[in-house]
Length: 215
Image (tube, rainbow, N blue to C red; front, top):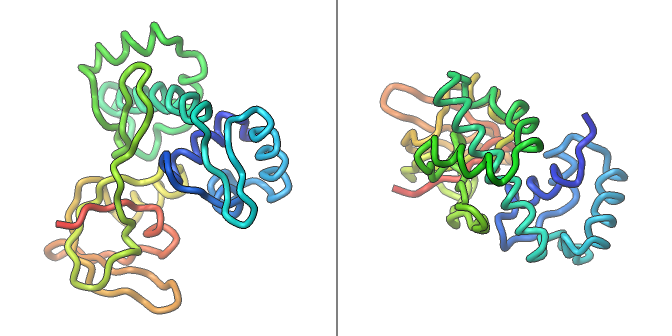
């Protein structure tokens, strides 16, 4: 399925929170589309005043874009919670179905879904679930790639990307787990993390999309 403008807005919010610029290369990787397609869509979003583009720096959501993206993310993440908690989906299985459901969810339905779920604050991937008419402001966190050997960290949030989540399931790394960084390979090699007898090598690409709290 070809990504639409909503997919772009959500990814820009996921990658850059509400305050950081992201480049086209990150969008190409995140949506698995061509550089030409990204450039074309970014131009459209700029014309619609949904993003601002700074040459050689990247794109960032405008206030209008952040408002639209926050509404989309709220509905998406509420459905993810429902699918995991009530239909027993794994956290790497929910994205595609939540994507479908968010587009047919009215504000009234989102309100009742939120009430039914007893006002969850985070989705299964650690992302903030905003209240009705609230903007998404993720807690500022460093990535796993930002810390040296010997640092103790808790996995706090990961990007809601199917490829990444499948990978984390394969290597048996989950949200809220606590690890010690035991090795950082040179030239963007894997990062080794350890929890008791469990030792895991995480690729640099994956580690750069895992947000952690230092403990």
